[in-house]
Length: 193
Image 1 (cartoon, rainbow, N blue to C red):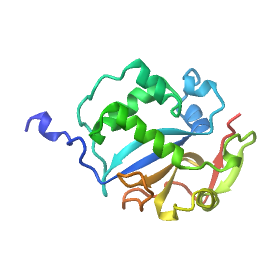
Image 2 (image 1 turned 120 degrees about the vertical axis):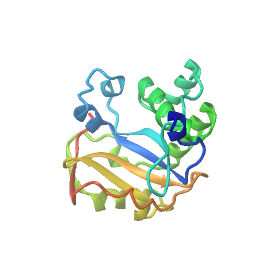
Image 3 (image 1 turned 60 degrees about the vertical axis):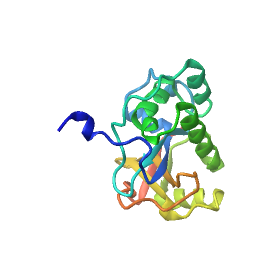
């Protein structure tokens, strides 16, 4: 079977996942101290907007269009690094079936539609909490969300990211069956400063 036949078709997916990465964990776990993302005191950042299926996700949808420097600069308003912008376009954006400018506009709209609770924006001390508390905090700030629309992801006991499921129209929706919490009951958040 030719390799092209194994590729997914751009634009064929069920919903989006907005990935909000806990930047301090990314910088520690990936040993990326020189990454521009890790030179600033970020907290939750837009990691990406991922096309998702009820089970699995589309991948290998092609290379997509070239990203102009002005489009990359525009995406840096809500994403923390140039390399992440380029990676997210190639790994996920192309599979959306949208033009790059439309994909990043959707990613920004999705990111800005979620209100990050204030005490997570500038965490100066490590925080020991629970998945239930994190979800409750986000539900309080985002009345359209329900627990089944959020998935927490950890590296060991440390929070790595929060995933929020959205319709193709960017409204909150229930996550698919394979998008479940990957954290224990208690989690730690590394400080952002």
